[in-house]
Length: 295
Image (tube, rainbow, N blue to C red; front, top):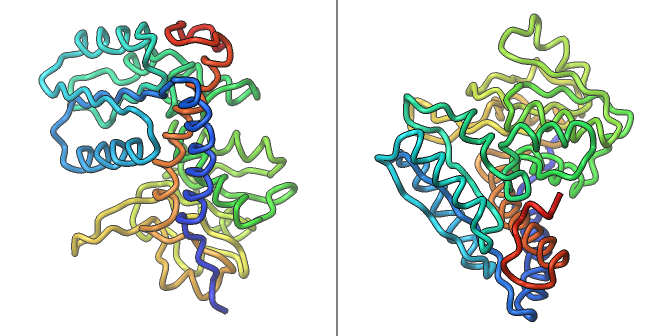
Protein backbone atom coordinates (compact mmCIF):
# COMPACT_ATOMS: atom_id res chain seq x y z
CA UNK A 1 0.00 0.00 0.00
CA UNK A 2 1.24 3.47 -0.88
CA UNK A 3 0.20 6.15 1.58
CA UNK A 4 -1.46 9.31 0.31
CA UNK A 5 0.77 12.33 0.91
CA UNK A 6 -1.15 15.02 2.77
CA UNK A 7 0.87 17.96 1.51
CA UNK A 8 0.23 21.44 2.82
CA UNK A 9 0.51 23.36 -0.45
CA UNK A 10 -3.09 23.05 -1.68
CA UNK A 11 -4.39 23.76 1.83
CA UNK A 12 -2.26 26.90 2.10
CA UNK A 13 -3.40 28.03 -1.34
CA UNK A 14 -7.04 27.76 -0.29
CA UNK A 15 -6.36 29.76 2.88
CA UNK A 16 -4.49 32.43 0.93
CA UNK A 17 -7.46 32.72 -1.40
CA UNK A 18 -9.69 33.39 1.62
CA UNK A 19 -7.28 36.06 2.83
CA UNK A 20 -7.13 37.65 -0.62
CA UNK A 21 -10.91 38.10 -0.72
CA UNK A 22 -10.91 39.79 2.70
CA UNK A 23 -7.90 41.96 1.83
CA UNK A 24 -9.58 43.12 -1.36
CA UNK A 25 -12.76 44.01 0.52
CA UNK A 26 -10.73 46.03 3.03
CA UNK A 27 -8.72 47.71 0.28
CA UNK A 28 -11.92 48.88 -1.37
CA UNK A 29 -12.67 50.71 1.88
CA UNK A 30 -9.14 52.11 2.23
CA UNK A 31 -8.34 49.82 5.15
CA UNK A 32 -5.18 47.72 5.56
CA UNK A 33 -4.56 44.85 7.95
CA UNK A 34 -1.33 45.08 9.94
CA UNK A 35 0.76 42.58 11.89
CA UNK A 36 3.48 43.44 14.41
CA UNK A 37 6.09 40.78 15.16
CA UNK A 38 8.32 41.23 18.21
CA UNK A 39 11.74 39.59 17.89
CA UNK A 40 13.96 39.58 20.97
CA UNK A 41 16.51 37.01 19.86
CA UNK A 42 19.28 36.65 17.29
CA UNK A 43 18.42 33.00 16.69
CA UNK A 44 18.91 32.16 12.99
CA UNK A 45 15.93 29.79 12.81
CA UNK A 46 13.72 32.49 14.30
CA UNK A 47 15.03 35.02 11.80
CA UNK A 48 14.18 32.66 8.92
CA UNK A 49 10.65 32.11 10.22
CA UNK A 50 10.01 35.83 10.70
CA UNK A 51 11.22 36.53 7.16
CA UNK A 52 8.70 33.96 5.92
CA UNK A 53 5.93 35.84 7.75
CA UNK A 54 7.12 39.14 6.25
CA UNK A 55 7.19 37.66 2.76
CA UNK A 56 3.77 36.03 3.09
CA UNK A 57 2.24 39.23 4.44
CA UNK A 58 3.71 41.29 1.62
CA UNK A 59 2.37 38.92 -1.03
CA UNK A 60 -1.09 39.08 0.54
CA UNK A 61 -1.20 42.85 0.86
CA UNK A 62 -0.89 42.86 4.64
CA UNK A 63 1.45 45.28 6.37
CA UNK A 64 4.04 43.53 8.54
CA UNK A 65 6.04 45.48 11.11
CA UNK A 66 8.98 43.58 12.61
CA UNK A 67 10.31 45.02 15.87
CA UNK A 68 13.80 43.61 16.33
CA UNK A 69 14.92 44.37 19.89
CA UNK A 70 17.45 41.66 20.81
CA UNK A 71 18.84 43.65 23.74
CA UNK A 72 15.48 44.31 25.39
CA UNK A 73 14.72 43.20 28.94
CA UNK A 74 11.45 41.87 30.36
CA UNK A 75 10.10 45.33 31.15
CA UNK A 76 10.87 46.67 27.69
CA UNK A 77 9.12 43.76 26.02
CA UNK A 78 6.11 44.27 28.29
CA UNK A 79 6.00 47.96 27.37
CA UNK A 80 6.26 47.08 23.67
CA UNK A 81 3.31 44.69 23.85
CA UNK A 82 1.22 47.23 25.77
CA UNK A 83 1.98 49.90 23.19
CA UNK A 84 0.94 47.58 20.36
CA UNK A 85 -2.28 46.72 22.19
CA UNK A 86 -3.06 50.43 22.21
CA UNK A 87 -1.97 51.04 18.63
CA UNK A 88 -5.20 51.36 16.70
CA UNK A 89 -3.53 50.49 13.39
CA UNK A 90 -2.21 47.09 14.57
CA UNK A 91 -4.54 44.10 14.23
CA UNK A 92 -2.25 41.20 15.06
CA UNK A 93 0.62 40.76 17.53
CA UNK A 94 3.14 37.92 17.54
CA UNK A 95 5.75 37.58 20.29
CA UNK A 96 8.26 35.34 18.58
CA UNK A 97 9.55 32.51 20.73
CA UNK A 98 11.72 30.99 22.03
CA UNK A 99 12.93 33.95 24.06
CA UNK A 100 16.46 34.11 25.46
CA UNK A 101 17.11 32.78 28.95
CA UNK A 102 15.93 35.01 31.75
CA UNK A 103 12.57 36.00 30.27
CA UNK A 104 9.20 35.02 31.69
CA UNK A 105 7.41 34.29 28.44
CA UNK A 106 4.20 33.27 30.21
CA UNK A 107 3.78 36.71 31.75
CA UNK A 108 4.52 38.43 28.46
CA UNK A 109 1.98 36.52 26.37
CA UNK A 110 -0.65 37.24 29.04
CA UNK A 111 -0.31 40.90 28.06
CA UNK A 112 -1.31 40.38 24.42
CA UNK A 113 -4.85 41.58 23.74
CA UNK A 114 -6.83 38.41 22.86
CA UNK A 115 -8.40 40.34 19.99
CA UNK A 116 -4.91 40.77 18.49
CA UNK A 117 -3.57 37.40 19.61
CA UNK A 118 -3.45 35.89 16.13
CA UNK A 119 -1.29 32.93 17.21
CA UNK A 120 -3.40 32.00 20.24
CA UNK A 121 -0.61 32.51 22.78
CA UNK A 122 -2.53 34.27 25.56
CA UNK A 123 -4.05 31.82 28.11
CA UNK A 124 -7.33 33.72 27.70
CA UNK A 125 -7.36 32.70 24.05
CA UNK A 126 -6.77 29.06 25.01
CA UNK A 127 -9.47 29.24 27.67
CA UNK A 128 -11.99 30.67 25.24
CA UNK A 129 -11.08 28.00 22.74
CA UNK A 130 -11.70 25.27 25.31
CA UNK A 131 -15.27 26.41 25.97
CA UNK A 132 -16.13 27.17 22.36
CA UNK A 133 -15.99 30.95 22.56
CA UNK A 134 -14.50 33.10 19.75
CA UNK A 135 -10.71 33.01 19.86
CA UNK A 136 -7.76 32.55 17.56
CA UNK A 137 -6.39 29.03 17.83
CA UNK A 138 -2.62 28.60 17.70
CA UNK A 139 -1.84 28.49 13.99
CA UNK A 140 0.02 25.17 14.10
CA UNK A 141 -2.84 23.43 15.88
CA UNK A 142 -5.38 24.82 13.45
CA UNK A 143 -3.13 23.80 10.54
CA UNK A 144 -3.58 20.15 11.52
CA UNK A 145 -7.37 20.55 11.39
CA UNK A 146 -7.21 22.37 8.07
CA UNK A 147 -5.20 19.54 6.52
CA UNK A 148 -7.49 16.83 7.87
CA UNK A 149 -10.60 18.63 6.64
CA UNK A 150 -9.12 19.49 3.24
CA UNK A 151 -8.35 15.83 2.57
CA UNK A 152 -11.75 14.81 3.99
CA UNK A 153 -10.34 12.64 6.78
CA UNK A 154 -13.26 11.64 9.04
CA UNK A 155 -13.05 12.91 12.62
CA UNK A 156 -16.53 12.60 14.12
CA UNK A 157 -16.70 9.46 16.22
CA UNK A 158 -13.07 8.54 15.41
CA UNK A 159 -10.29 7.90 17.90
CA UNK A 160 -7.47 10.44 17.51
CA UNK A 161 -4.20 10.07 19.41
CA UNK A 162 -2.36 13.37 19.94
CA UNK A 163 1.24 12.82 21.00
CA UNK A 164 2.42 16.02 22.65
CA UNK A 165 0.81 18.28 25.27
CA UNK A 166 2.25 21.72 24.55
CA UNK A 167 0.12 24.85 24.81
CA UNK A 168 0.81 25.66 21.16
CA UNK A 169 -0.12 22.32 19.58
CA UNK A 170 -1.23 19.37 21.73
CA UNK A 171 -3.66 21.00 24.14
CA UNK A 172 -5.41 23.39 21.72
CA UNK A 173 -5.50 20.70 19.04
CA UNK A 174 -7.32 18.39 21.45
CA UNK A 175 -9.97 21.08 21.93
CA UNK A 176 -10.36 21.59 18.18
CA UNK A 177 -10.75 17.84 17.69
CA UNK A 178 -13.34 17.58 20.45
CA UNK A 179 -15.32 20.34 18.76
CA UNK A 180 -15.45 18.05 15.73
CA UNK A 181 -16.73 15.14 17.84
CA UNK A 182 -13.53 13.10 17.82
CA UNK A 183 -12.56 10.93 20.77
CA UNK A 184 -9.13 12.18 21.82
CA UNK A 185 -6.26 10.56 23.69
CA UNK A 186 -3.50 12.99 24.72
CA UNK A 187 -0.15 11.25 25.06
CA UNK A 188 3.21 12.65 26.09
CA UNK A 189 6.77 11.84 27.16
CA UNK A 190 5.59 10.02 30.30
CA UNK A 191 2.87 7.97 28.66
CA UNK A 192 3.41 4.28 29.40
CA UNK A 193 3.22 2.05 26.33
CA UNK A 194 2.64 4.79 23.77
CA UNK A 195 1.95 2.21 21.06
CA UNK A 196 -1.14 1.05 23.00
CA UNK A 197 -2.78 4.37 22.14
CA UNK A 198 -1.38 4.98 18.67
CA UNK A 199 -2.17 1.49 17.36
CA UNK A 200 -5.77 1.93 18.52
CA UNK A 201 -6.20 5.29 16.78
CA UNK A 202 -7.57 5.90 13.31
CA UNK A 203 -5.68 9.22 13.29
CA UNK A 204 -2.39 9.92 15.06
CA UNK A 205 -0.90 13.40 15.35
CA UNK A 206 2.76 13.57 16.31
CA UNK A 207 3.79 16.79 18.06
CA UNK A 208 6.32 15.62 20.64
CA UNK A 209 9.46 17.16 19.17
CA UNK A 210 11.40 13.88 19.10
CA UNK A 211 12.82 12.72 15.79
CA UNK A 212 11.52 9.40 14.47
CA UNK A 213 9.55 8.69 17.66
CA UNK A 214 6.74 6.93 15.77
CA UNK A 215 7.69 3.85 13.75
CA UNK A 216 5.75 1.37 11.64
CA UNK A 217 5.02 -0.98 14.56
CA UNK A 218 3.36 1.91 16.43
CA UNK A 219 0.51 2.59 13.99
CA UNK A 220 -2.64 0.80 12.92
CA UNK A 221 -3.08 -0.52 9.41
CA UNK A 222 -4.71 2.06 7.10
CA UNK A 223 -4.66 4.79 9.74
CA UNK A 224 -3.80 8.44 9.08
CA UNK A 225 -0.69 10.10 10.53
CA UNK A 226 -0.05 13.84 10.77
CA UNK A 227 3.53 14.81 11.54
CA UNK A 228 3.96 18.19 13.26
CA UNK A 229 7.56 17.57 14.36
CA UNK A 230 10.45 19.71 13.14
CA UNK A 231 13.76 18.22 14.20
CA UNK A 232 17.25 18.34 12.76
CA UNK A 233 18.98 14.97 12.37
CA UNK A 234 22.69 14.16 12.58
CA UNK A 235 23.09 15.07 8.91
CA UNK A 236 21.54 18.49 9.41
CA UNK A 237 18.33 17.51 7.62
CA UNK A 238 14.86 18.53 8.77
CA UNK A 239 12.89 15.49 9.93
CA UNK A 240 9.63 14.98 11.74
CA UNK A 241 8.54 12.90 14.72
CA UNK A 242 7.58 10.09 12.36
CA UNK A 243 9.97 7.51 10.92
CA UNK A 244 8.40 7.93 7.50
CA UNK A 245 10.15 5.01 5.79
CA UNK A 246 8.63 2.44 8.17
CA UNK A 247 5.26 4.14 8.67
CA UNK A 248 4.40 5.01 5.07
CA UNK A 249 3.94 1.42 3.79
CA UNK A 250 1.44 0.70 6.57
CA UNK A 251 -0.80 3.77 6.79
CA UNK A 252 -3.33 5.15 4.33
CA UNK A 253 -2.14 8.76 4.55
CA UNK A 254 0.82 10.68 5.97
CA UNK A 255 1.73 14.36 6.04
CA UNK A 256 5.37 14.98 5.06
CA UNK A 257 8.10 16.93 6.83
CA UNK A 258 8.93 19.33 5.33
CA UNK A 259 5.98 20.24 3.13
CA UNK A 260 3.08 19.44 5.43
CA UNK A 261 1.78 21.26 8.49
CA UNK A 262 4.45 23.94 8.44
CA UNK A 263 3.41 25.05 4.98
CA UNK A 264 -0.05 25.91 6.26
CA UNK A 265 0.91 27.70 9.48
CA UNK A 266 2.14 30.98 7.99
CA UNK A 267 -0.87 31.22 5.69
CA UNK A 268 -3.14 30.88 8.74
CA UNK A 269 -1.32 33.63 10.65
CA UNK A 270 -1.99 36.01 7.78
CA UNK A 271 -5.62 34.92 7.60
CA UNK A 272 -6.05 35.47 11.34
CA UNK A 273 -4.67 39.01 11.02
CA UNK A 274 -6.98 39.80 8.13
CA UNK A 275 -9.96 38.35 10.01
CA UNK A 276 -9.12 40.54 13.02
CA UNK A 277 -8.87 43.62 10.81
CA UNK A 278 -12.11 42.74 9.05
CA UNK A 279 -13.98 42.33 12.32
CA UNK A 280 -12.82 45.58 13.87
CA UNK A 281 -13.59 47.42 10.65
CA UNK A 282 -17.07 45.89 10.52
CA UNK A 283 -17.69 46.95 14.12
CA UNK A 284 -16.49 50.52 13.72
CA UNK A 285 -16.84 51.31 10.04
CA UNK A 286 -13.65 53.34 10.23
CA UNK A 287 -9.96 53.14 11.09
CA UNK A 288 -8.55 53.70 14.51
CA UNK A 289 -10.95 52.00 16.92
CA UNK A 290 -9.47 50.01 19.84
CA UNK A 291 -9.40 46.29 19.24
CA UNK A 292 -10.90 45.74 22.72
CA UNK A 293 -14.31 46.22 21.06
CA UNK A 294 -13.86 42.90 19.28
CA UNK A 295 -14.86 40.85 22.32
